[in-house]
Length: 302
Image (cartoon, rainbow, N blue to C red; front, side):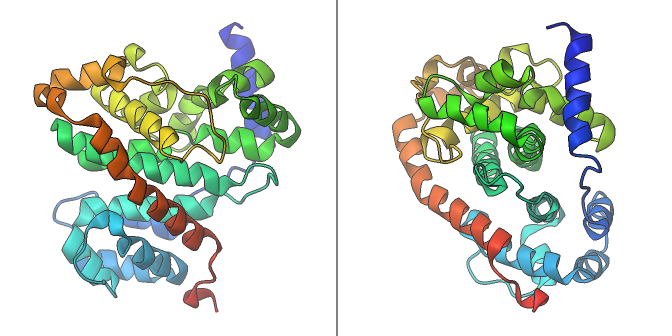
């Protein structure tokens, strides 16, 4: 398919989702405030607390096992002090995204996208730390957002996406292949749209576009490779959209693994089998956290 036809298809799918949901104004303000290293903690905390729902859900996420706090945090001010502004940005973005898109497809709940996304975010951050990648929070956000194109396709093109799901359930197609075959485009094709309309950074757009083909990455190939590996790990350990896809993966033979080893040769000594099994406890925590943030009635809403 030529680029003109593909762009027309993308525009058509986006039109079905129009008006496209946007991040809450409170979240946008917090993200802006937390960009600078000298931002006042009180100012950030005050901005968060203007949104009671966001506050409650942030506290819940902060107290999950992912962030490694040794005691329960009960206020946003405590969370900022313990975690720092960079991680608070990640948490604000996570909780905001979870609540920006409503689930519209009875056969493919949007929570599955964010279970996979949060799993990839945490694993991306962990791989980035192991590899000595320069920006752990960028790795986290890239992992969280890499499949955002699936939201448009799965939640606003219900009948067509049911056919995609049928192919994936048969076990012979990945989502990428099934989407391309049935829809003419796939979730990676929306990278440019999100870059233009939501102001995504070039590197993040590249992750969205190239996470299934990391060898094509140019701007930040290490970041794309980190997310590619996190995506594989997540799928193999059960964050696979409630669908078991037939996957045979030898990580040391993956292009992305070899590329990451260039950044950190010591990774060659990693016990990948042990690393993979260590993810199992985190997978259960991811599912529980997403379900609570999405479906549990918050005290703030009562």
